Length: 369
Image (cartoon, rainbow, N blue to C red; front, side, top):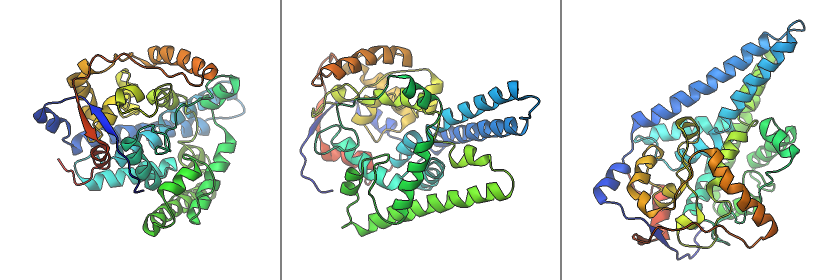
């Protein structure tokens, strides 16, 4: 995508020495995130499998709820693998060593049926032109979320079998080298960022789809022939259900805010929360800070906020407080489609930077600290 874009983004001032420290990546801190998260996936998956093995006709009144609880926890935690873990790994910031970024990106993306090829191209563009109409196809404002109703609640807390079918269907098409159906992204947007004229990128996208599709198919066959078919729910589709907490954490990023502005404080939302949701969410609750300085690793975002908090809108603490603010905004937008929430800005002590710089930092082009 070689579109001519000229956006001068507002950015808070940070001392150069402080910013140098904030941008420093660490293998140790990267491992401190991925190892516990993958161990949690293994622990909840093991618990679910043991609960399944102990389910019998004589004990189902208490064993079945225990199994459902184990699957609920497993799906809840695993739902953060795709758009959260893969998001940060696509930025190439968690680890100092590129080999670890690439390895764990493939591990998370495989487990989550996630497309890191299309996502990275899209997301770098999203940072450059955040919610600007005609340029950002990743997040289009206003976002009218289907957040109300019994059906939504049941699907968020459990699963939608139709989504499994569509998921496999989309990957079959991708493995054939075609992009026709809407999935994580709209097909129109994906074809725009992965044009057929870019044969190398399309080939990379197709090859990854084949790895995911045939890899999961092989595992599913092994699970069935060895008598452990239940692992299909734990491994093959473990990241595809109970996405309620990931939705509650991720939806506030841009919803209800202003499109087509050159200030991340007006089009992106930060909230704070306790350590465990922040751990699952890879600190993306600091979303204004992440958009302003995309080269800062996720584990340094809390410190970054402390450095620039005086020049940012106040942030609610906790998901309850965040959604207490968000729901009235969403309700009003359903009635008045032109309404946007404009936070009070404490000042404009920062500077303006070219969108090309934001793009390069989001892509980590030529940057290694």
